[in-house]
Length: 150
Image 1 (tube, rainbow, N blue to C red):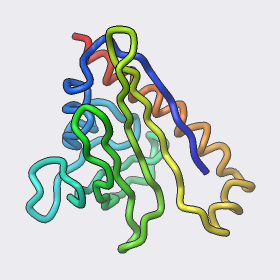
Image 2 (image 1 turned 30 degrees about the vertical axis):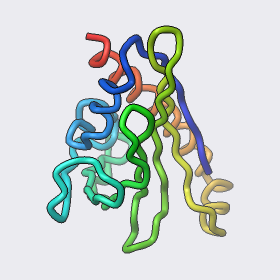
Image 3 (image 1 turned 120 degrees about the vertical axis):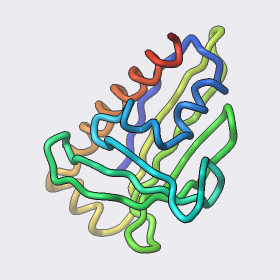
């Protein structure tokens, strides 16, 4: 299961990347993840750095923490992370930034790791989650846009 959303922002890629890659900002932008903190001595984005996010699923619950690991960290171009269950990645999130029309096109995407469970999940309602994720990514990007363009 996967999906993406793209929003054009009239702001430089470096400014947008700084907002996205500092996971402590997530509560300003995400409809579901209302806070995050770096783990294991990490103080900022770097490949392999871990953080945890505090999630309120569908904005109503349940509420839980997820541990994540940075998988892409190229200033001004991309920032990505995987959501972990133990040491196993179950979902991958990526932001890509591309120069466009005097600003930046920002694409947020997610991709769940392939498994028989994910296939069954998609058939029995996961498609609703996919639709929700795309809507939430669009909302997240518009909230980032508002700050980046201010």
